[in-house]
Length: 249
Image (cartoon, rainbow, N blue to C red; front, side, top):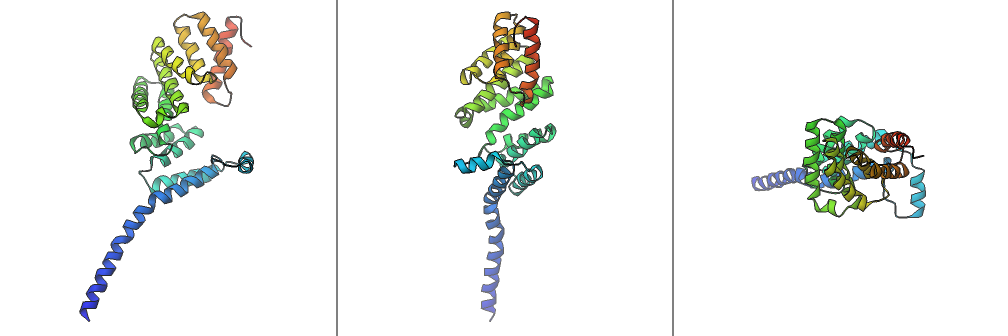
C-alpha cells in the first residue's frame, strides 16, 4: 500500500540524514586513533610500566609511518589543532621548517586541545630563526598571546620556553636589558637548562658586563647539549668567548 511506501521512504530519508551526522560525530575519535598510531611510530608514547619503558628504549622511529598517521589525523578532522601541532613538530624535527611553520600556524588558530598550546613557542622559535624584523614582530605577538593561556601557565617547561624565546627575540631586536630580565625569569624556572644561560651571556656581552657574561658562558657550556641544534651553535660561541678571556674548558 502507498501508506507503507511513504513510511519506508521517510525512514530511509532519516537514515540517509543520520549517516553523515554519525560519521561527523566520530571524526574526533578517529583522529585520536591516528594520532596515537603516529605517537607509537614516533616512539613518543607515554609508558606506564617499566617493561613498556624498556621496549620504548629500543623503539625505532618509522618516519614515513609517522607522517602518514599524523597527516591522516589532520585531514580527518581539520579542526584538530593537536594533530597539526604534532605534524608541525615532526616536520621541524626533519628540518623542513616551512612545512612546520604552516602546520603550527594552523594549530595556533584552532581551539586549544591536547598539546596544541605548545605550537606557540615552537612557531615563535622558527620565526626567530628566520631573522627578519617582521618575523621578530610575529614572534613577540605569538609569545604575548601564549603568556595569557592558562594551560601554558600550568606547564613549567613551556613557560620556560616562552620566556627564553621572548628573551631571544628582544636580544635579536637589540634590546639586551629587556632580554636579560626575561632570560633571568626563565633561569629561575630551570637553573640547569642551557638555552637561557647561553642567551643571557650574549645579552650581558652587549651590555659590556664582562664578569656576568663570563659566568653565564660557563653555565651555558656546562649545561648545553650538542644534540640540540640551538645549543650546539652556542657551545661553539661559548668556547670562543671563554677562550678569548682566558677561561673555560
